[in-house]
Length: 473
Image (cartoon, rainbow, N blue to C red):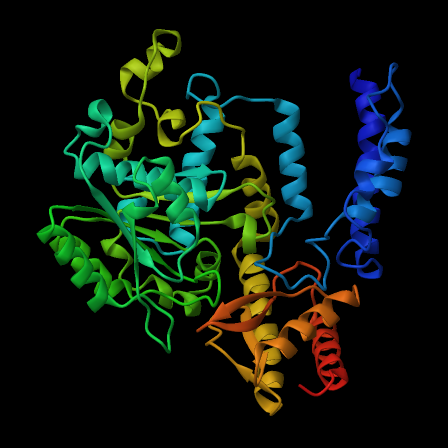
């Protein structure tokens, strides 16, 4: 493809994306086709000769789009939002066009330095502790996901708990990771990858009302493990749990970790974005105790997947834990010690120029634009919760400090399961579920960029009507 051919095809692709976004409200949120439909529509092999971009776009419309779940749809209320935006897409396009491999400062000086500055911008925007800034002992890096951030935190914690022996001897003792029963599954996966096994994770009970980790239970678990010869290595606290957006009490958890010299990682994958608004920083109380922290701009901050912002308070410890330097990567800049090589801050060697899409988003929206997006989501969720609270058929199952509302029909699980299926079958909205105290609970998460009050109103009308149409239980 020549530059002129790319120019022509690129215009066609950008027009296609713009048309897709403009027609989203008229599409069903989820695919209406049975499994195997897309695969059956594809040819048995690739074309022998090349095809024009028009043919590819035609098949996108015919084969691919009908088989999608549309995460940017204004009626998408499932899981957590996975935002993208025009500036993010353009930044990703530039990154793809540049094709930079930013594993070392030397392989992409601007790739590295822009990322360092942007993570400092974000740290200031979220009012994170000074230790997380590159001007201090720590710094930030973009991971692909909060799951990878948790894995890196686990590896640093093991390195610290082993007194540095972990690099050579691996897991030579019994180590323990602690997190709440409401924490993300990535904590267990990280422990398994790190060689601790599922038994290396101790799940700590939560408060029955707040759904937050119990500091009393955490202390008891750590002390019991120490007495049994197990080494407490890591506590993963959550700000905004996946099921209910509960906030673990960092002001109480932090001192316990400090007292027992346990690494504290704070996972704010979803809710961290809310801290761009000063009034929504309550989850960060006690964050000064944290050794590492992460949140996903690709969830609620208008930046396309994949983009997790991860900070550590001690960058030297991170590099010591993960650095491997073969001869073919040696260079004068690295040897000088004056640069950051982000290959030492992550599991893979290679890395894309992810900072560009984040830079485009921050430049386009500005601080006030990002705050407006977050505040709108919180307000729309609060209004929906008021509708639930006012209807005696329903109950709120948990607090809604951010933009997720957990609710259910009063009574047994069966009607709630049928209600969710009926609402999603309309194709107008999409909700997901969880279990809270063992009860089937519906989740409505606001955050898609095009979602307005009218879409939340429609969601409530569909839910209310479907509830009325349920047969008596």
